[in-house]
Image 1 (cartoon, rainbow, N blue to C red):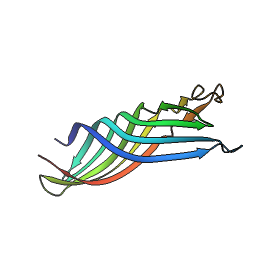
Image 2: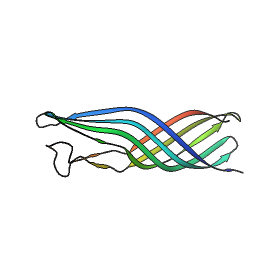
Image 3: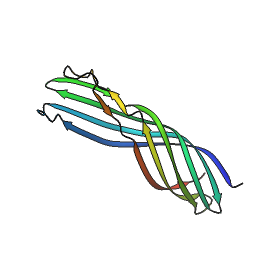
Image 4: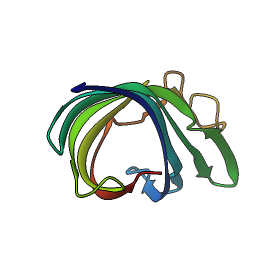
Length: 144
């Protein structure tokens, strides 16, 4: 009766955009724009009175775009990636229908995306890296 198993899905809408200019002459501008971050995870925990301590793990998905402008030569590629989401947290039941939650999630993705063919000035072996993401969140859950 103390062990809890479940499935959880989430979707976060992002507004993360970062641009950089080529350090040599400033004529090349690269822009990365991340749009969504989501996951589908299993969740297993141990309940003690009104407190649930749990671990979670499953698949993650991120969407976005990467573009390069280089003296009128433009190119772009998708940053859409499937990865892994793992984490854990605690949930405190205030009543049968309301609980407070705090959790940390680590999202890991395939780090390198090939950009060697985006513009005529691209070099063989050019790539960008999608860094891993750590998210801490707190919230209120309603149970129906």
